[in-house]
Amino acid sequence: MWLNQFLFFAAILFCIGVYGVLTRKNGVLVLMSIELILNAVNINLVAFGAYNQDIGGQVFALFIIAVAAAEVGVGLAIVLLIYRNRRSIDVAEADLLQG
Amino acid sequence: MTLLLAELSQTEVWVTNSFFLAIALVSIFAALKMVTTDNVVHAALYLLVVLASVAAVYIILGAEFAAATQVLVYIGAILVLLLFGVMLTRARIGSESDLDHDQKWIGAMVAVIMAAVMGYSLWEGFEDAKLPDDRIVQGVEPVADTIFSTYIVPFEAISVLLLAALIGAVVVARRD
Image 1 (tube, rainbow over the protein chains, first blue to last red):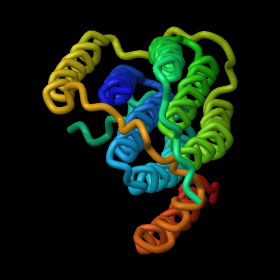
Image 2: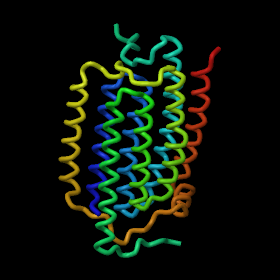
Image 3: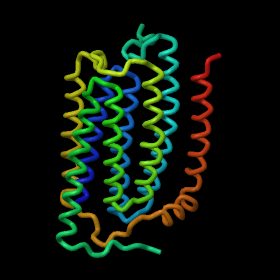
């Protein structure tokens, strides 16, 4: 098995996730696309761990899974707060910082 | 105890590669549907397909514990949390027309350019590097040994981070 087949797969998933983050307006869908990006990075880590016969790759993938859990918890809390204040989770409408 | 993946025969490599190809195609199709569908609940279900395929790729790579954690944490917890988010932010179940920006082509252009750059540099960097044929299955035991010796400090930091995120999420979302 080539190393590159896993890396290309991860790169394609990563780019699809970037497309989702850039085009989606719904806050929950943006969070889902971020999960896609984090998963692509995890595939890279595990693939390099198998390539170098180093367990560290898998350990760091586990750490990233834990960080993703924290991220989605806080992110959803923020999205809920935006929804409660504005009755909409359109991320394009949350533009208070735009002068 | 170390499990060795026995020297793979030619047919076994072929079978593994076909499995990988099938999983990758299904996963990429589901990911594309996820970022283009006009139904939020369907997007969550397509995300489930992607997460399950990534767990299968971990198993192909011999990372069993990461695969189990992927199923438990991502499919079991994060996906349910996202569905809760869908439920709490809008009652409507069904297709909606207003989920995307108007200028999709900019996002598509960025994604295609990134794919081209990454594909080129990956091909330049690792041309036909192969995974070692006699690689070890990285099971639970070596993972536990490594986390609780080499990576004990990051592990404790992650624990504190999770606690902080828990408290932060409660404080942010609480009605007062």
